[in-house]
Image (cartoon, rainbow, N blue to C red):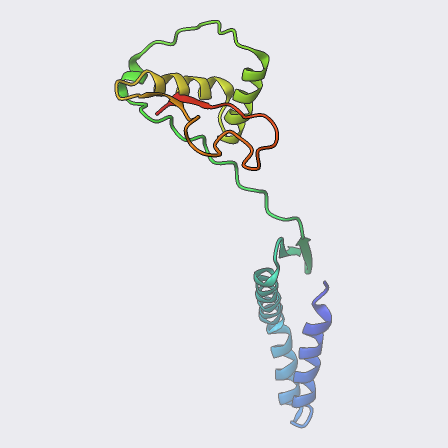
Length: 179
């Protein structure tokens, strides 16, 4: 954006106002017009920059910047949405303490049915953890002194594990796990 026409307009307005005076007033107005050019350019640039800031504040995403390119102003409009924040770090496993930092890492080979591995991967992904971290947490929970192994027979609870309308076959009537 070339702001020279706006500065020239101010200079012409000053000369027109001084035209009603004598020759000395007209020369003084001409000299003032040249002297005020830099101040007028700066005032216009500040006004345009303020307008760009207000437009940016009203935009749902992106921004408007004003840059000086020689004697001209250049507008840069960025309409890209802001980059999404990085995903939160996986929560620290419960019970992780100083003893874990001092322990060395042991490597083991674990063999399990493919269906169990698939289910473990799904649960690990849902909790935002790698399969290894999820398995370490499961083993840590199961090996705590306060851990309780639950094995319940729920066959005596009405409708649990069966179709309440009596259709079909009864489901699994045992619940097991660690608390």
